[in-house]
Image 1 (cartoon, helix red, strand yellow):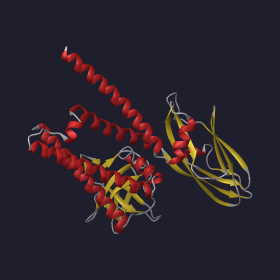
Image 2 (cartoon, one colour; image 1 turned 60 degrees about the vertical axis):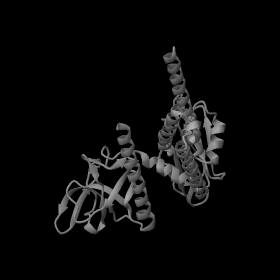
Image 3 (cartoon, one colour; image 1 turned 90 degrees about the vertical axis):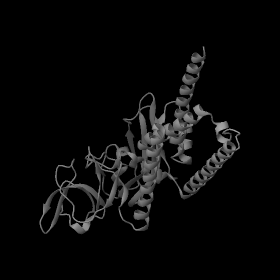
Image 4 (cartoon, one colour; image 1 turned 45 degrees about the horizontal axis):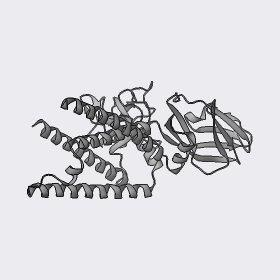
Length: 351
């Protein structure tokens, strides 16, 4: 009874999540409306909505209420997700990020507001930090990768569906489960599910700390202004003198004896070189002629046991490949330890 209830609840949750993804895709990519899952990249609503979370926005019918979290299009053109803290009769609404010291610098008209974020027991409908992973994947994956992934999923689904059909037929004939059940006994089924869940969770963790940035600067003949002393925190170097070589140094706050931070230039250019030294990374930039310059750079946490040159090679193939291989290795290691404990316990129980 309990097992059936758990399966039913799990199926309902998965079905609702798939429906929410379909709703997001249709509203944002077909109708260009900000409904469904949206990435909140700022910390303006922290701690209620951590930066990098994805929040679910639904259409708003009627007028919003005080203390409601709404999604509106600001005069700058971007979608803002903030809380309503006041009403100006005949004019609109006063909104504010709960972590911001001041309200938004405009009165939000009702026509600007598209929807609101529903809450459950006072907490907004969100998935914390998942936005980092989605952003990283969207910047790293190509249309070819998407097609290949779709084909793999379809083939895998057909295989599993056919295997389940074989199991059903064998049971009807009184031949036992057979099919996939013969290949995957109960423990192996659990181990497979555990491996998939561990892989997804670990990949999400790696993706949260991985980035693909546009390293950019503006070259000017006479200006020498630096926006940041540590460009790897923002990857905008500000305005630099044209046709000049400039070196930036950087020490990663992520680094430890277990993990180092890999910084790889993805664009083919001689204007930027990234060199790893004992003291950290040196970014050598040739500023070039007057104008805006931009190149792609990826940042990925790497386990210390992975050689630097191999990590660079994998990252250059695709920024998703390195986190995926590391995640698979850790998942297999955990699975091996779990299997060893299981078999030892099984042997001891037979004594």
